[in-house]
Image: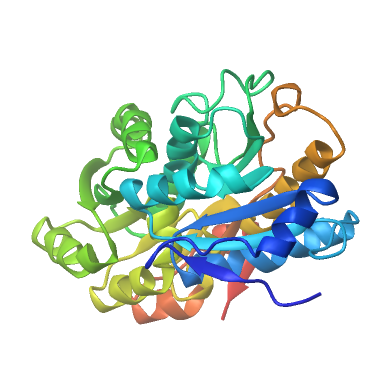
Length: 326
């Protein structure tokens, strides 16, 4: 399989080669994969998606034309990219809540598969999970409140007397408002006060940790989203530098040095998306394909980080963990 072509938004969207475009209209569906984030997030998405499609019999250049595009998680840039892209493709795959919400605004008829969207019903991407309607369907990241309560609980198991927790959120991400609406009622029930801290881009992260330090929080919840996925290493490094115990939605961040995570397998979600794409290529309508949810949630713990923070992870949590990094 030949190497995928990455097309950044900077400088405009590269046009499809004329010969390829003419052939694709007649023989092969043109599929665009839009990754909203950084190269770090692209690395988690592009190869697993290509493998998933290949396992289902679809390979770039043989029976589909596949292009991968990378755009920062800024609404105006995502919108500009999609406006230029949509007329020249037959199917769109887009990642994250920011991307899916903008795509819903721009893409009116093109079959679209989203994945890793927090709650696609609440943010207006689909009518319901069972009956998405229109031209959108895909995979949620988490469409329930239980996962957030679980993260607070896990962080409390590691951090003694946890009662004040920062919440790192991406400004402008529709998932951020939804998350705080969910967490608000949960916090008193588990005995913690939440301190929301918003960032507009990865450049704001260090000042965000300064704000957390001034707020005297004892731990950090990192809200899963395009910005935090794409800046996982930076967030993990800052959490360690600021001596901040952190709980994440992405296990990939724990592998990079975060303390603990509870969430679905991101690569498995990508492979779920590949199966939905295959259904659409075969003729099914997105409106008739129910939105799927992750099939498995995992707990990851980084003992090296715990040691560096002077924390002891209780044996009961280690016994429940799916992966322990030592």
